[in-house]
Image (cartoon, rainbow, N blue to C red; front, top):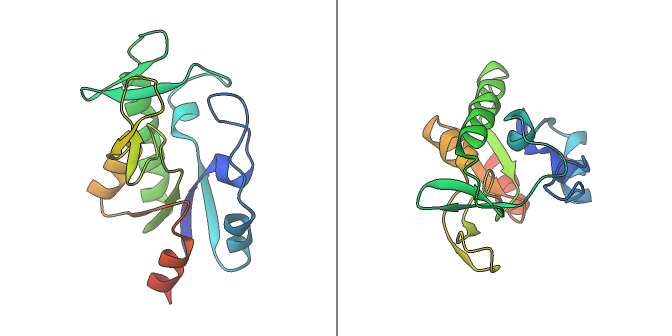
Length: 146
């Protein structure tokens, strides 16, 4: 079984600030599953590090008020293509991310306020039949796979 995973969760320094969101619990899944790392923002051509971005009015805007929706969409489609090529049915994604948020994203004001919503990549993956789980839902994923 293959699982798509936000690369930052596996320790890859691809976050907007050049760091990662390493989670040992997710890395440990590699003993049972083939983990397929993705970073849609990098895939879309955005630099590491880069300015933080948030979704506002269905556009992705960075902290300098520059529209980076094209890059986010481009990266999302590249991530989807990898998932389809590898016949992935499940993904573990970084909650709150404008690409990978599963249940919550920042509200677009850069004030740290969360709202219910999904990132650009999550929306595309789910629209194509790939079930997405937040990085806090490993137990829920394992129950589904049991």
